[in-house]
Image (cartoon, rainbow, N blue to C red; front, side):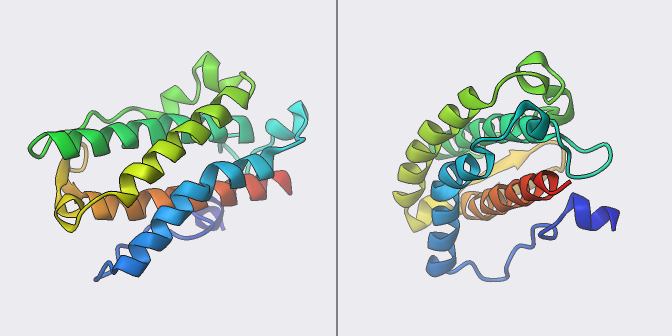
Length: 173
């Protein structure tokens, strides 16, 4: 049950083959995310924003701010990968970021605005990638993995859906 709450849509599973159709679906998920997030969080009270999806889980407010933080980082990782030779990305401690004053107790409007603008640019960038670009990789020092941009598109499409599911669970708590 705890795993179901932590991963309500399951963990990301990399398909054996990433087709153009699948990539386009993932890009659409990323592009549409801000509108879906806004729809899920519209008219929530301060009490609602403080609801969590599981014991010791982030509240809705923290989830929204986390998405802005995470997606800004990923967008930068894409740009680094497109402009450098296999860059080593800079990871961040997301749990500590979620406790900072701009996440733990700050209104979500600014993060919704960040996500709206960021995802417009990100969607434009993703739609412009060539097959060669999609194969470019970055190095993630925590996992010591080399991750292709096409894989990272899938990871972040999953990430969008993962946190929307968390918010939906929290709203029902």
